[in-house]
Length: 303
Image (tube, rainbow, N blue to C red; front, side, top):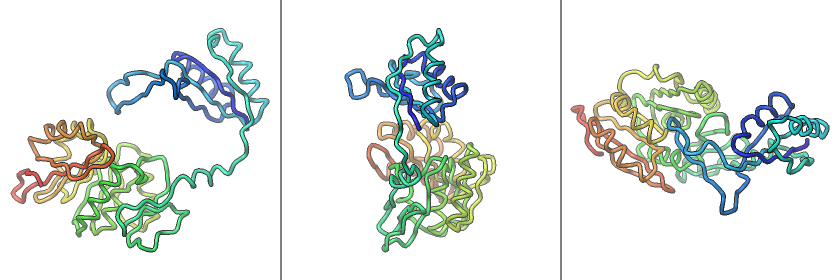
């Protein structure tokens, strides 16, 4: 394989990427900040929904992978012949050493300890001897491999409060990892819902791989009240869904939420105040876990 490395300004990144992928036989294209590790480096952050503060980096490096040198050379020649690409420059055209990409990818994912007896273990690893409960989970298209603090906090809470919940709702299930954790810790019925069809498919596959019975579907299939509602999403959608998620919490039940930065906790307190009082119950690397409890009479109080 051969890699073509180009430099371009922000306005040209999208047209160059589309030309490489759609017309010039590139196998893949990646984009990175050309000013990385300099004073001009620009961090890009944001959450789904609001517009990004910046559409892209002022100066970008594009890396396009081709099956062979001839295709890479032809792509560079044809691209630079376009009048609109006058400000695109070739930085390198180089061979990429053959590697076992599957093994290389797998080497980046090791077993993850949630508690001393509860582990997330990729399929190509052996479970640690101390593990009594194990989630077999491989990286896939859906969010949720257990490496992120928000996922670990939710799983820690589930393990610490394990009981035979009659029903559990995992709202925004991603890979289904929280639904699996609840099922392994006593939940009798688990509904996992997500707006992304890839997440529903991933959850179904992961449930099968772990021998866990659950229902994975789109959000409209969540019905009625649940003793436990889990939602590991992001602060803004969690705030917008306050009426919806609160309505799914049964009398005596709990709502466990993550995807919230420490500085966003007050925003969530305010959003849920009409229905539930929330309390921060865990913190990890700048993220917090928030829990709300509904009294047996249906009123919402802090847990």
